[in-house]
View 1 (cartoon, rainbow, N blue to C red):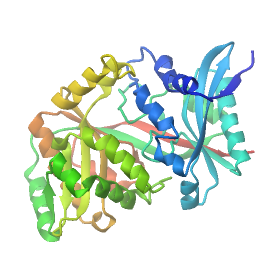
View 2 (spheres, one colour; view 1 turned 120 degrees about the vertical axis):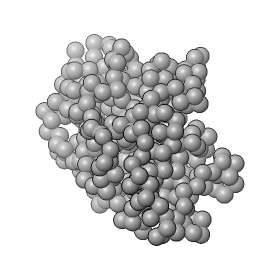
View 3 (cartoon, rainbow, N blue to C red; view 1 turned 180 degrees about the horizontal axis):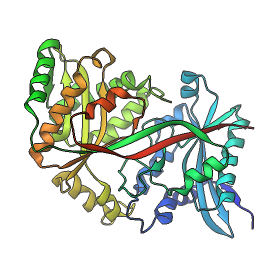
Length: 377
């Protein structure tokens, strides 16, 4: 039988869409499930502020009556205007090892984009950079993280057979936390603080809320990331959404804030105890017992690994050693709490400023992710 592509039109269909990868990768020791409830919020037009300027539809693939794939078609006009590229995005793509299925899924996104005047297709991308993005092309036998996709090796083969080519890559590293920080790191950090009148500060959650530091944090993200591939600035409503969604989850012991002499935020770094094994135990469900595994990992740091979720440095300070100041501050905390490993978020392969942060630490590049694209014919 031929492949049937069905547009999702109700909540039941969205639930099938969100749950599909948890079924496709069931039993895979490297796959980290997402929480279905979180994904459904991302897909909900009433909840996700990205819909203020984005458009999207979701599609399921069936063959012989069985669900065999999924894909989202996304239009982000803000990003297209920023980068001068009339592109449609494909995201949240998963499929069985059947090229008729993968071809059908990508063709429906291409047609959807062409109807809206787009002449190029690229992905996997989400609504914005705050969503999971990038197709795994190296590191299939490495445990994933809570903010990245896992996919089978055949995905890459399918896309390249369909004429898709590389646009850009992200790399990820696993970094060993030393038993102690070399004295030279401490001296260098102090020199940077003295030279530019900076200080690292620890805030309580009450203090963060009182001064609106969450909003400052995401505004700094906009200033820092607006030159990176595909980035579209977060809107005030998106910032409000993310502040409410993530601020209460932060482990403030693993956050570094860097302030100038006027108490203005100029840089920050956020880490979190790895949630990968807890999410595997939760199996994509918060209830009835998923919350327990997640809370245990978050509150009691019962893992030897942290995920480096986000580092942002104001452009005026990026060449002044401030990133190293953040790393020194946070790694001192990691040593204190007994962590042994740190997993980086995906880093653009040509972002040498970030790559250079790990010189001097024992590390290995263990995963690579790719954005693919092609012209719509």
